[in-house]
Image 1 (cartoon, rainbow, N blue to C red):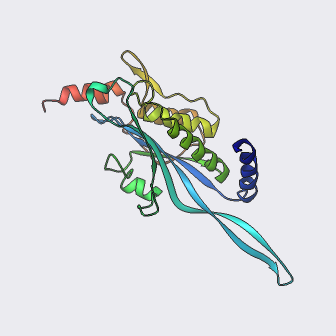
Image 2 (image 1 turned 90 degrees about the vertical axis):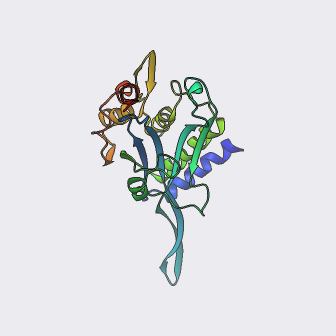
Image 3 (image 1 turned 120 degrees about the vertical axis):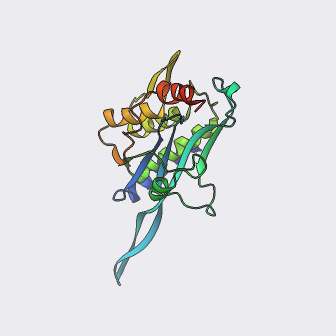
Length: 233
């Protein structure tokens, strides 16, 4: 049934969303001064409003797609962060927030002032905007929901939070971006490399909060060496 319904949905969304605007937001916590860092992605929400138009003798109805100024936020974490499992496949935690209408809305302002709602506990270091359409946002949410349902294991070296967001970014933009840096003894995706690569290779990214001052260091320097040099301080 799904292959038959999907084209109908896309035609419907394309028809009602032609004049509407929507965006995708890349959320970055830098690997900086001992912090591991994190990467997430947020997608605009919108609602469809029906209004009548025309004269008293010739009424018709128009569907307007309106941004709600709230976001749906997605990211990936390990279920457990025990050190003995850090280099292994571990059970993943795929988040789609908020979970219900009873929870506080996530907005651009909340990401900038408070950060992501479930982890970290401080404002994001960087926030980038990618211009999209409601149709593209609909497809991206479906893509991320599918990724979550597949429950690919979390692995700090092979598939981490940044890899998850890179997959989403490449899906929505058609890019083949990679965000890997050398961490002995292999290449792994990192938040700092992701942020710098986006700004270098994707000219359409808009900076809403600049993390350039915090993402210049490598993972080895900012996470591993910093922790080692400051463990007794």
